[in-house]
Image (cartoon, rainbow, N blue to C red; front, side):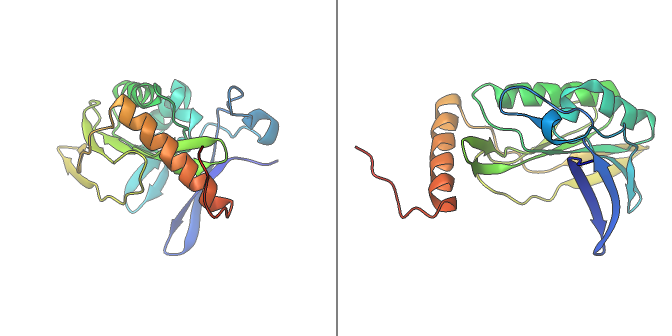
Length: 196
């Protein structure tokens, strides 16, 4: 069997693996043909924190987040390669807020950025507190490294970090086209493009 998985490493050692449960089979996704669905996961203990690790489509359905909450997760860390379209940022945020409100868990959503063949990934990673409030938001269409401050008060985890507002619609489309074209040209070793 081949799984779509995330590995957790600490001090250079693999300490856990979690497999994607919900395999999409629509649009650009063909996961059911390529992968075997994983079992509903439990959280991974890392340095005193129990991380729930939904992978991409697992956050778009309630079952994985619910299972992680019921099995003791302290926080959801969502690993994603979610391609951009003009309505995706709003749908992505609404879905993530729904999972935090349903589970009462804070959430960190890490999304790929860059162009890959015909797809463009907008990044725009973010963090939400357990009440669904925005704790941090990274820029769209550019790589960024961010430290999120995590504090625990009266048993409740709170996240805080910088907030970069998402791009407006027309700017997002322009930046998406530019990033997709730039990465396509560079990754294929083309010397440039000719427009005309």
